[in-house]
Length: 174
Image 1 (spheres, helix red, strand yellow):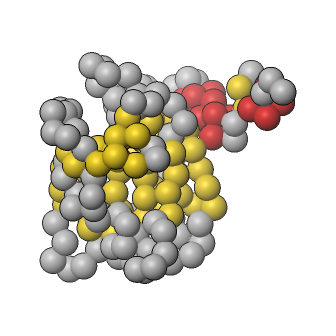
Image 2 (cartoon, helix red, strand yellow):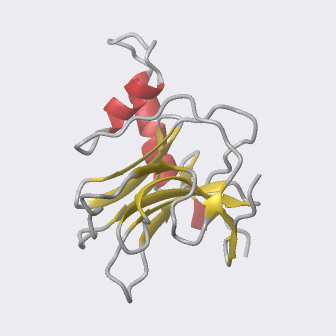
Image 3 (cartoon, one colour):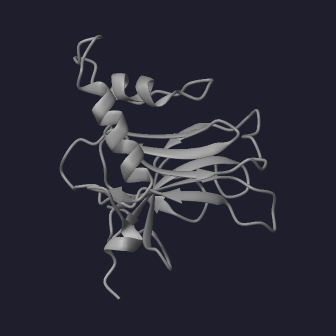
């Protein structure tokens, strides 16, 4: 495993990127030791990247499906087909340069590659919807499955910070 950049997050390991995700393009990173994901959009120099965190620990040693999307209105992060975080962002993103390469691992933004394996990777030229991401994650789910809607609803609750009908702030211990 490569040494990775240290920050106030702890160790930052690049997973994949197009550009550096700080000033150009986007980047998906794994933050250790908490093992949460960070999806970032590049902003002009002098500004911080716009980022969203999964708030869920990614288990080590298990295959995990992840997806990050931005439709020009909202930045979203999915884990195993479920929406785990969403934040409004209608500002700009500095797009990757025409010569930018898609990278697995090292992004060239100060974070280094972590030790991980990839099974399947897909890039799309449009923002996928929640149901499309779920179906890519669970391809064997029957088309008319009654399971899909409750799973998508669960993802919406998780992203809103609601667990079993209680928000995170309501569940916090003073």
